[in-house]
Length: 477
Ligand code: AMP
Ligand code: ZN
Image (cartoon, rainbow, N blue to C red):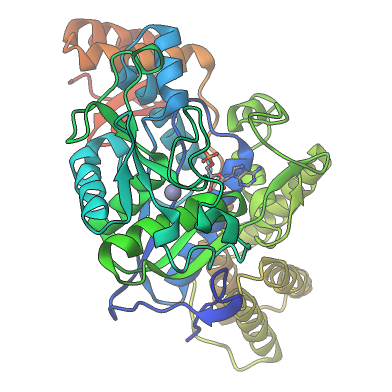
């Protein structure tokens, strides 16, 4: 059996990742702010977390993962106000889009997808505790700040020299933004401003307001996974200040270590600059699907470079990824669907067993996907060669299938891609979702019928509307 050795940002060493409670690895992964469609840079990070999760599962661990949704912040509020709709209506559209994209990219489901707005009472409670423990103070405008000088270990994750921030030497600078005790002090509870926030606020002991972004993650991690978690992950841009601030809040509140390990994925770049909304150099998944790139090629492209290496996005890279996916599919098509772990006592059996071990051992070394893929493709070459010879026993075929299927438990590219849903159908589904929310059943049925005339069938499942192409479906609601 293998144990994953993962590079830990905190200790700057590879460390074995094991469940500290002896049961499951409790991991918290920072999710999207649902004010727009996520871009494929964001999905590089979620795919790194998918690789991590699948590797742990392949090695026999059970995982309990939280991926949060930030559904209240400046950007979501601004978007809702500009569109003239309630915050919830605005964010629901992007939440749904996010889940659709996760499914399209075959990112395994997390155990929990908490939404920040569902945990406001717990957030108020953590702020109250931090004030009580003198880690936080109330500002004259009703905001609450974390006092950095009380966080003795602040900076331990980012390894930055933060002495000036901690000392608060340049604090009490006049003006709104810096009327705090230390310039690095960060907001836990943001006081309400009618012009900025419109109808979005919650009552608290400090007046109307809303939680700060860093606080959300500390609270949801504690609530769903406990005081000390095994792993916290995200993109490298989150190390400072987001994760550093999470540590300060959580450890200030519980006086226990917040997370035993930290893992961070490097960025996806475009022309050697970080892909980001603010630079405008981004592609959403939808952009690439509309250019007819199969989701499996996008998945493979984003997965196949080591997570701690920057990856430059190019269309040639996507084409190369598609070629690799087809090679894996081709060999799978030459092998039986069934498989067997029984190693045949032949040179071919021994060679495949070695490739299998190399594949797993590479993943165990800090998710070294490049070496794992080398082992896979060398194995594929050998299998093809052996199949061409026509001298393959059925035991050998079953064992080769086991090797390829093991690799695909990680890669998940052999299943055929689903066709992208045409925009017209997607718009009707969106309309039907709204109709059902308003309990307009007749309208919902009418929309289902219209969708059917376009060759798609909709079914209502506990996870929402499920749409399938060309399959006869029940007419029931
Ligand atoms: P955000 O919605 O900006 O908070 O980002 C959500 C997740 O995507 C975080 O874990 C970020 O670190 C990550 N992320 C943002 N931009 C990129 C990028 N260009 N490449 C990889 N990950 C990214
Ligand atoms: Zn977070």
